[in-house]
Amino acid sequence: MGLPELPNAEKGKVVLRFAPNPNGPLSFGHARGIVINGSYAEKFDGELILRFDDTDTSVKPPLIEAYQQIPKEAEWLLGFPPHRIVIASDRMEHYYEHAEKMLSNNFGYVCTCSAESFRELRVAKTECPCRNQDSDFNMELWGKMLDGTFKPGDAVVRVKTGMELKNPALRDWPALRMQDTETNPHPRKEIGSKYRVWPLLDFQSAVEDHLQGVTHIIRGKDLMDSTRKQTLLYKHFGWDYPDTMYWGRVKVHEWGGFSTSQMRRDIEAGLFEGWDDPRLPTISALKNRGITSEALRQFWIELGVTQKDISVPLATLYSHNTKQIDDDAPRISFIRNPVKLQISGEHQNSVTTSVHPNHESMGTRTFDVSNHTVLIEKEDINKPKLRLKEFADFDLEGNSAKFVSQPRSDKRPIVHWISETDSHEAKLIYPENGEILTIDGVLENHDYKSGTMVQIERIGYGILIDNSTIMFTHD
RNA sequence: GCUCGUGUGGUGUAGCUAGGUCCAUCAUAGUGGGUUUUCAUCCCGCCGACCCGGGUUCGAAUCCCGGCACGAGCACCA
Image (cartoon, rainbow, N blue to C red; front, side, top):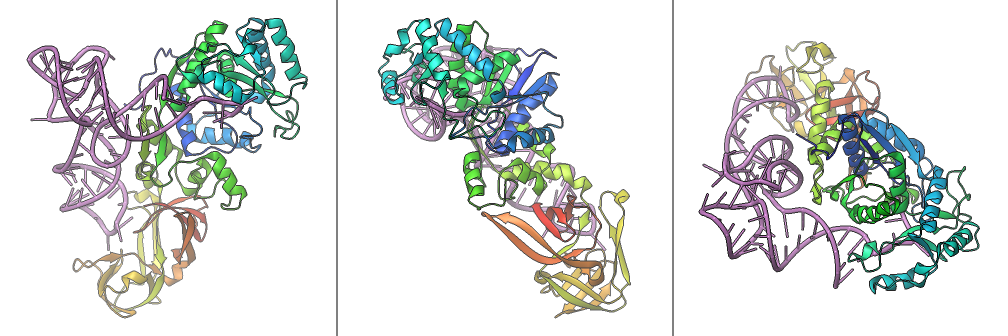
C-alpha cells in the first residue's frame, strides 16, 4: 500500500537525495520530492541528502534566506532532519577536478562555438571543429576559462557523447560554462565572485550523486533526458548510474501551476506579503494556514510515483488534514455578522457544553446567559423557531425570543450562538481568488494559544492567529 | 521537426512485468441514509472508468501493431 517497490533496495544501504534550487523557500510541489525520497530513506533505514543546486547566479539566483529555511521546512515535512546537507557551491573543486579528468582523458572538450552555431550543428548532427582538439590544447583553453581570458559566452566544456545520437538533447551536451560573477555575484558571501566557471545541472548533479554514493534517484520526468545524458557521462567515468524513478507533472485545480521564480517576482513587486502569504502555495503558507505535515505526507504518498501528469483538487489534501486535526481541535463558537437576541422566559442562567463532543477529557465551557442576551448569526434571525445549540428551544419575533423548552420539543433547526458576556469582537480571515477576505464577528472567549487548530462550529476548521483572529483552514 | 514519456470512473490510485480468480481495488468528490443538541467527526448505501481501431488467444485493462490525445526534453536554467 502506498509507495511502489524501490528496485534493488537493500536495507541500510539506500541513499536518496532531494535537490532543490534555493531560489526561494519550498513550495507545495517540492514537498513531493521531500516526502517521497524521505519516505524511502526512512523505510529502508537509509539516508536522505538535501542538496542545494545553487550553480546559477543570473537566471535563477539563489535566495540567501533559503539556505536556512529549506532545511527547517524539510525537517518539518519529514519529521526528521535530512541526514546530510550538501551545497553545490561549496563543492566547486570537485567539479573542476572531474572536468579536468574529462578533458585529459579526452571524453570532454572546450568548445568555443557560439550557442547559436552549436545549435545548428546539433540539428545537423555535425561535429564542431573543437571536438577533435587534443587534450593538451583543451587543458590550455580550460586554463583560459579559469583565468578569465575567456568571457562568459566564449567557451563551454562539453561532454563527448556523439553528434549522431538519435535524441538531439543528448548530443555533446554542455557540462560547464562561465558566468559573470562580478556583476552577478553568488549571494553566499563566502562564494561571491570567487568562481568564473560553473558546472551546469546535468554535470554537477551527476558528479555529486556519484561522490555522495546516491543509490536511487526519484525526480520529475522532465529530467528523463538528464538521466540519459548523465548515464553517458557515467560510462565515460566508468561509474554505474543509480536506479531511477520519475513522477509526472502536478497541477492543483485551485492554483494551476506554481513557479518559484514567478512567486519571487510577485513578492518583490509587493503583490504578496511574503513567502508565507496564505494565498501562496508555499510550505510556509500552508503550515501557517493549519495544514499539518502528516496530511502533506499522506497526500503525496497516496499519489505515489506515477509518470502521469495530474491535476488534483485541494479537497483531497483537506480531507487528510481533517483526519489529522479533528480529534484535537477544540470546538469554538464564532458568530459571523452577529445580531443580538433578547431571550425571555424560564430559561437557565448558564449553559455548559463540551469542548469536544467526542472527547470528554477535553473539558467543558460555560456561558452566562443571566443578562438574557445572546448573539446569533444574522442569517439565523429569520428562522421563526430555532434551537440554541446545547441550550433550549426558542420562538423568535424580531430580535426577541421566547423560551419554549430546554429539551428538544421538535425538529427546529439548531444554530450556534454565544452569550454577550462570554465573547469578544473578532475576525475570520480567508484567502480567496487571490485576495484575503475578512468576516467580522464575535468569538467565544478562550485562552488557547496562537497556532491552535480549532473547529469553528457550523463553519469549519481554522487556526488561531491571535486571541481575536482566526485564519480559516478548510471546511 | 527530432527524441522521450503517459493514457483506468468528476479527481487521484490499485491491477498491467509472468493474459483468465477483474461483471476491475481503494481514496476523494457527489448523492441518499444512520449516529450526533455543529453544515464537525464517525458509520452505512448509491453513483461512476479500462483513449480509439485492428490483431494474437478458448479468453486481454493486461501481449502485438496502427491511430489519436496530452505532457516533457532538444538552454552557456534548475
